[in-house]
Amino acid sequence: MKRSGAMVAGLALLFGLGMTPAAAADPEPESPQAQILATNFQLPFPCGQSWTGNSSASSAHQSWEIDFNRGSTADADLGDPVVAAASGTVAISAHQGSVNGYGNLVKIDHGGGWTTYYAHLNTRSVSAGQSVSQGQQIGTVGKTSKPGNNISPHLHYEVRLGTSYPSNVQKAVFNGVTFGYPEQTLTSRNCGGSTNPYTPQEVCGSGYSVIDSAALGSEGTVYLLFNSANGNNCVTTLKSKSLGTATATSAYLEVQGTARKTDSGNFGYYAGPVVAQASGTCVKWGGKAGAAVYDSPLEHCG
Image (cartoon, rainbow, N blue to C red; front, side):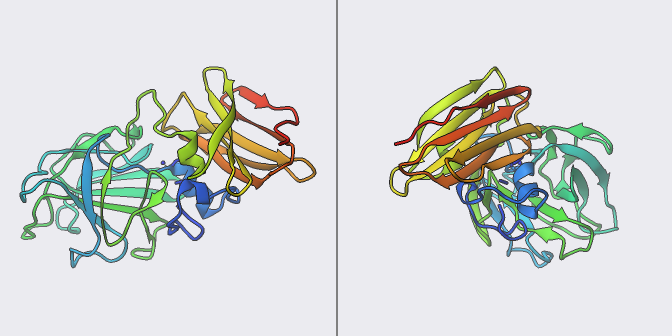
């Protein structure tokens, strides 16, 4: 998920933000925006794969639910791996039988009321109560449903907040950007591993260039960027460890003579972006990842 500050994962509303991570600066702590950024949902398929999602092709859809497919034939996706969109705890791993049309269902609890649903699976590879990491395989694409409901293979995916269906189904956010409803083809950034899939420029947005950085031991790096077109500085802290897992991370920017702005929380990939107008003004900047901290002097006064 940031962003697991996430998965940024987007929002100026409630998960419905169509903003990029750069536009989602400095969310209020515990706000829906901060929560989704902290979760940093990624596409529920292995890194590098391209899938097409559609929210309007099924009469069974009640809200922002998405059906995913790839390939040129109806059965091309059958048996393809499905992975966790974010880390969490498996709340359900069961065939729903005649209860509903979900068939083989995995539901993952991500904390804070956020859950994801993965339905119609051919196989399930996790059990209820099991902890899963982002990108971990949880099953395979299938066409299971209730008796008599014949469907073609696809992954039915939902993100929910709370318990009142269907109003609790939220717009899906992948890699910090709201899904392009009703249909969009996306490439998975659910890459896991030891390399952070983000760059400072991706976090801060178009027009920003890195002008300084400081290593946070082996935990990560904090970056200071500048946009010459608008005179804004931007600070982000990118993690190097525990990628995809929400851990304490922060970034701050203090323009001389003004209050410090901070983005701090448990994030999966990065903290920030923290943006402020600083043309011709000195700044202090820094951040934290794990136990490592960097605090700059008052500098970059040009």
